[in-house]
Image (tube, rainbow, N blue to C red; front, top):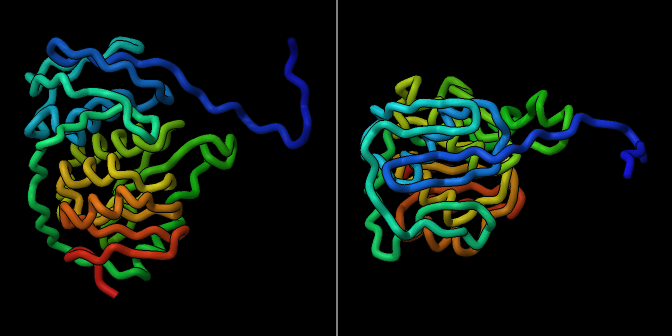
Length: 227
């Protein structure tokens, strides 16, 4: 076997298996091995496994041990979109209370933040960014779109970002799992250059999350979004 060139040669995206141990639970996540502490923090918060942002984590190579107590659950399974997450049939998601409102123009202008050097070098990474009135607050990349979200949420937690004043910008399609992540983090607006799934739209109406999909050409207008 050999690798041969068939055109412009780009760098190969990096992916490895990381294990998060939280209480008696073990989560195996295929991800890009950067910002692993932020990945774990964002995963725990966006999946509703911890209630506050004071999370103590020990990272040793590809093993991440969570020292903070977590909510036990046996409902961890594979999402239909191919990413792991916690689904609770009777879960009551928190009420969204947006402080800032964003216009469609502000959402469209933010798409420039999805352009990263890592993506240009590989064409293989997803990007997620937290954006406020003054521009991008923090940004992360990963081979998995849900992982990129978890990383940027973890970055935001470490920077003590007020999530009610910002929105989440993503490069991948919007799924109901992404909607739930935003709501659990109390981020009131989700923006993507890609498509939005019908199940995600249903979840937006259920939770009050505003969402913008530029590929689909629609917005779900809640309190955080204004024309």
